[in-house]
Image (cartoon, rainbow, N blue to C red):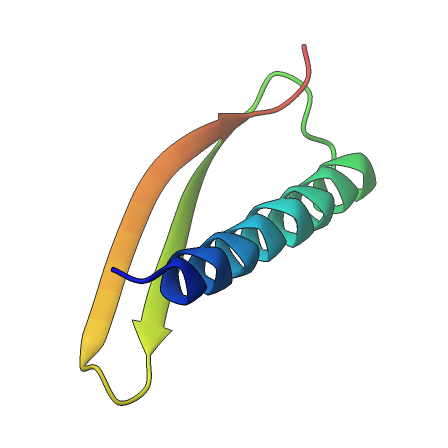
Length: 63
């Protein structure tokens, strides 16, 4: 793959990671998340590529 492709993909993924973390942290602060575990899911789609990639996991609230 080209350098331009790699750079654009890394930039997009960094934006996804940073903004997602900020959104999760804000939601956890606003909720009573102590001692709870939350199921999480991210769905990535790319128009024109017929791509749907699903990632699931769990996020633990603060102890």
